Length: 279
Image 1 (cartoon, one colour):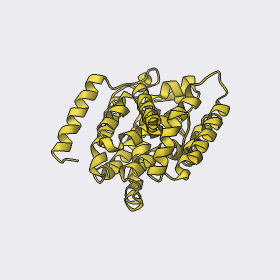
Image 2 (cartoon, helix red, strand yellow):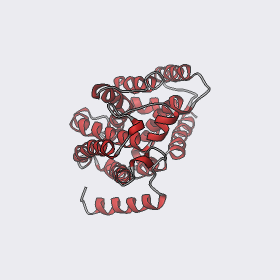
Image 3 (cartoon, one colour):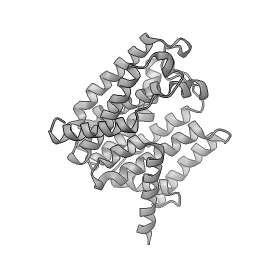
Image 4 (cartoon, one colour):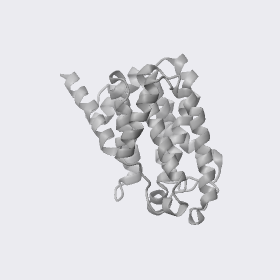
């Protein structure tokens, strides 16, 4: 009854997604049923790694992330793991030809969060964002194009820019926790102790440029993926607008959110745009 265990594994990844991110789980639900489990499995893997370095205070984080990596490779080689998150993820990796360089880049950025707290130039932060966000978008893109290498290459750049936009919005939204709790600064050249409107607007302009490029890729996605990705895009655009309208001192003191009521409205708007073939 291996199939039963595999089903349970994917359900665990789905539970992780729904528990940690209502917005992302909503976007996944807008994907075709045939690819939802694969995206849940990717989210489960990256979420657990991220939780290790961000949340497991009082534990040996280096040991945990190293062990998580070792267990993943054991699962990949054996084709099974009793860790349901790793069991579902290794199946997705094989089915959709997710290359190991993407996984290694992701784990590299996660591990860097244990030792690096400031980014001094554009090259450093771009390398971090590539590993922490861009490659996650690329893993999902592998699923969206069903492992087709030609279609993957055509959409790769836009998928990376979407991942970058999402990550930068998260950086700005999580400014308080990253700075005060984790002692991290993901904005080179910006002193968070004197964070002002000019600094905020500069970051927002950069994110908007990423979104403009990313949108060109969204409209080219396969029908199975387009609506779900567009839903996530609309949500993050709304969150960015809310951050733009929030005074900089408030961003530094609280985590800005989009209400469930607003999310429902965004979903309706996305659905209308999609049905009218505006996307």
